[in-house]
Amino acid sequence: MGLSISALSNLSGVSISSLKRYEATSGVPKASKGHLQLLRNVFQAHGIEFVGTPDDRPGIRVDTLRR
Image (cartoon, rainbow, N blue to C red; front, side, top):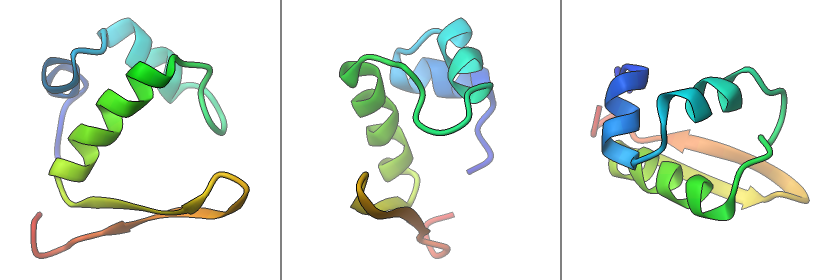
């Protein structure tokens, strides 16, 4: 995506310290659903598509044409 942590924070409204904590976590971070939805919105706006469900083959697809 090419976003710095500062840019991601600005776009999502999630603090840099929270983003660093999430980044250091293996798996799904312990975060509020609100924060996860804010981050998902930014990722989707930048061509990341979330597929599957948390219990059944979760993953992402990258829209390379939007990058």
